[in-house]
Length: 95
Image (cartoon, rainbow, N blue to C red; front, side, top):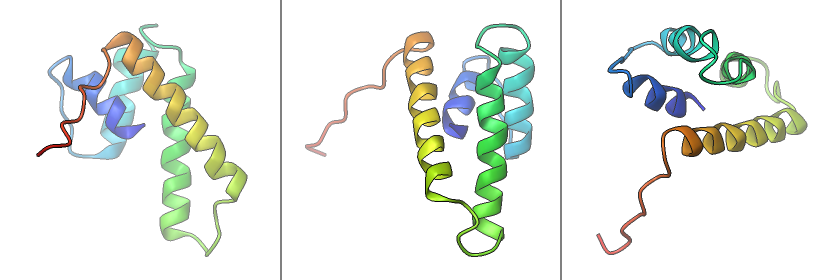
């Protein structure tokens, strides 16, 4: 979801070095303006929090169902991007 948010922002000519800045800018330029449903900004915020918890928290800090929920949200995020930005280019497997 983070890389998708970066792609949205790059479409505006914006680039950020910190994840928190990407998330904030996505909220400012896309969720708050109504260009995307606000729930997608919330998805980013919650995914960032869970990733931090998984990376730096106790072992098994993120439950299986939480991870599955994030995967489902990431799929929705990708569908949103494909509808608003366009589909990913085909992968050339011969390289």
